[in-house]
Image 1: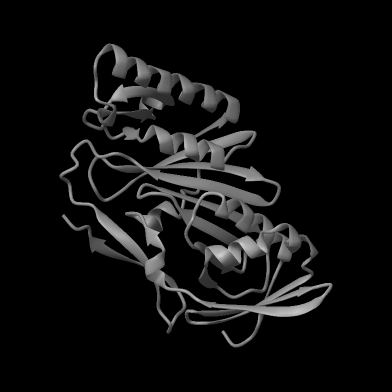
Image 2: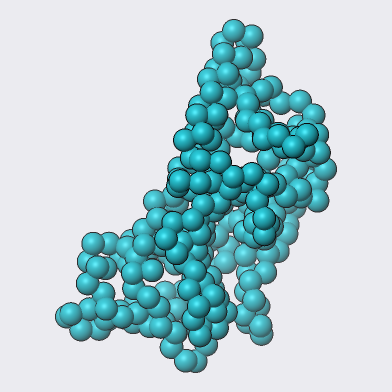
Length: 274
């Protein structure tokens, strides 16, 4: 990209502030003519993103922001930033920052391998256009806490291994059910998820209303659960990969990489070792 790209300082400050609180690694920034999006990975089954919805003349581009740069742009001093311009040349980023004291330039190179995307990252990053269910945050939080309490009862009273317990999300028969259950075979409309990641997802998308959706992966009995909320002009979402009842099924990890010829975001699949 030869022409400098102007960025909204307060959009960058807010988005990076939220994103860096959920990761110690780099943050993926994706800029399109309709939005600026910040995405993070947390473990192999969870991603979260914060998307500022605003029509701009920006071309499509993306880059990774390392932790030090993210903390600088999200710090208290960033309130005084009056302008941001960036130039991107493949994996080299030059960011010009303007504040009342003048201008300075932050430069860095990023490596795609430093952003370890979970299996089906491309699918997890694109939620369905419509949600299957919408509930208040309070109602969902209460249901999840009851489900976790049931998991504790199963572990203590029935001597079940904690590794074999999960939160069941059931969209069967036109209903929406959250419960704590032992992991058995999944049905087409019923999947199991790590309780820690469900709680983490609720904290990320905390809002008045939370939308839910499911999208099956190419692996039988596996699905992606999406939680989506809106806050002012921000769309906040997380995606969680379900637990496979049969862990011997082949799973792929993925890695984000760039094609310099097109600048598009691709995901390369690779077989997990072992």
